Image: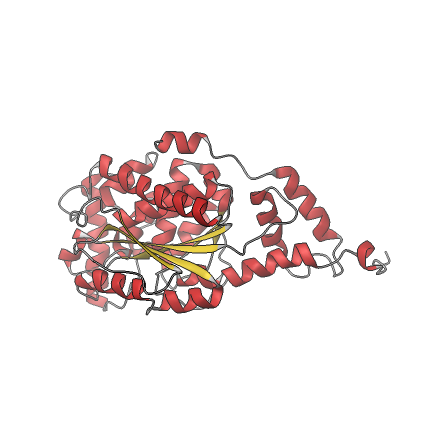
Length: 357
């Protein structure tokens, strides 16, 4: 299977089931759409899963990891070796994503798609999985040329798809989420966002994991120079990914395509996952029908990227961590939306009088 095969087998969400879900929502024992976004979520999940009895109890967050040559330009707050160290912490079950995933009853998969270091780790928890599908050891510095070749861009997307495809089949997953790890990865994410949305680097770029004002100026300049040098073509998502993207960003796009392919909802995390979503959307616009934005990040470019795809974040908790933490937190809202549409009675079922006109 290749990317074309995958895209050709992705179908739109079911409009007839969506209509039925809206009809049920209109008759639940509450004022019209009184539960707001929860009503929206329930209807969307019904249409994605093609059933009025959807389930979201089998969950996994896919944390894709990779390194970035652009850190040579001093755009990151932490040294590159932290990528490998954090992968080890994820596998050991010690990090934020592990704690929040345990609360959300979600499995965690960590995948080395392009870290500079090699991590040899055995998961300490049966709900954790570690996979190595390294395409190359980090991207190139995109101020000096393309971040990767087009072939490598295709490979990292396929790596993400294959990993998610296997796990979806193995565990019969019905809700997945995207996460990331990679020092410096907000820079290529902001660059991808600027290319697709047409917004300036100043609008799309934030402080990442905690850089200072001088580093922010460098980061904006780096993005401008990278785009000017490489001239990524927004009508060709693979071109954008290869020229200013990241290996883990491509893998996130592959995970999203796997969710759409298998007709299950995908919770998209912060700005790095939004960049992966943009690549998936560029390859297959229908894939956005399977995406749910988990949260609003403090990174300014993320909301522009979501608006471009017509997505609205579920929660705003002021998060700026990545790892998939916001997407996993949103699993609670998704479950609530599903319970609303499947468990609350209609006026007729409960024998409750409807509103008088």
